[in-house]
Amino acid sequence: MPYLDTCNRCLTATSPAIAPIAVKPSGPGGVLATYRCPNCGDIWKTGWAAQPEDDAA
Ligand SMILES: [Zn+2]
Image 1 (tube, rainbow, N blue to C red):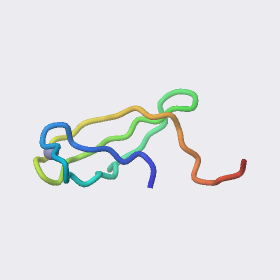
Image 2: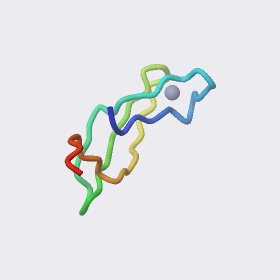
Image 3: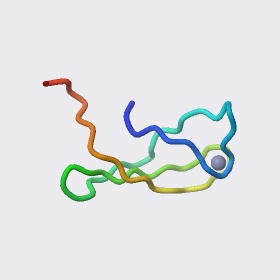
Image 4: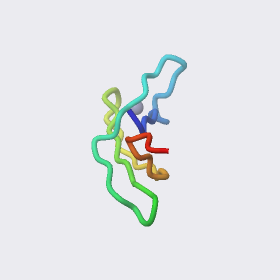
């Protein structure tokens, strides 16, 4: 799954990657992903370059 991130507040060596709860377009070729940490409840957003799901190269 694309756009996995980790919580900066409770990050440890064994912290699992967190999938976004929402991904919205953010300008040309970009998306803004919203995350909620299941451990501490922190919510943050991270901007990404858009990653197409298909591999039509
Ligand atoms: Zn956390």
